[in-house]
Length: 464
Image (cartoon, rainbow, N blue to C red; front, side, top):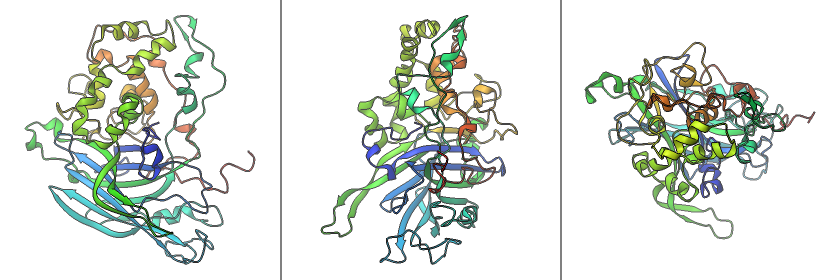
């Protein structure tokens, strides 16, 4: 959760496992859109001597759909290669790494960046360098300097970074998957009745863990489609975003220590659009299938959005707390509100001053209306909190996507499509009880926005 180990097969392949995706209008550069995709989830900081890295045999891509068909119109493709400086050393580094060309650094990763648009591939950069992993205060004493050196501004207008970052996702994972336990929610009184008492405070299960991020900041005109394509102005500013990882279809294991080889066409093994979609909407038997398909095929998963399993579980787990949701569930009416949020975007007229619809094609994508500027004081509940620049209008690093999704499933968004429905009092209070303040590594105010990765020397702290 958000998409950490969300399907049986990709859980065995963390190098290709997409864990989080973000898409937002850059708050410090408002004529650009920032796209961030995280991979290699649940990294413990003390990862030596073999520190975490991208896969040289994986093709990582961030896709942009700007005409509403659930297929990519623009793709940013990242492909990596690894080089060893001293083949006779077992060490990642033999002294402090104070620059990207330090002789003390033994294992380096480089990448090429290709932009695919209108059926043509354009190589934007070749052999850009990733920073090292954040080993510790002696090995990487000025880590922020290394990140600055590994952040590139391209002549085509993009800004790009690929490397280790702190995992910014926050969730009380152990509680939620213990039969939907919501610790702070269970302390509430609803209609004068105390719900249940759960022991302990919420715990951010992904705190002090790292990921590997690919991030690109793109000028608006490089992602938008001209308004004439639609014949209407509103949708011209809306884009759909998802990320994917692909591997060659054939892998041949090397004999007696020889390197493995991969051949054949690339096939998709992982993808991610909206947070939690494959995690809690798609059933177990179809999760691996979902990872292999493009968003344009997501109509086949629409029934699980229209009648989500979690919506039925909430009244069962919390008796007498969600009576209105329970009645709605029993009518078997399709949840048109969730279909709009997750599969088509919210059409104009449902929320004052807001739309992020991409049309009728049902596809799991982060939908971002690039015409909506960032807010000076972001609300972590995004659109539900009156902040139209937040999730589900794209996704910012500080958005509380778990609480937003839970509240939507609990019925808060049903009145958008059914004015007669009254959400249960508890629906607007559902939360795991965590926020961006529960992430130890603070987010940055500028690109690449995710915090400095945790180093192995200080995490866990000596005091613990």
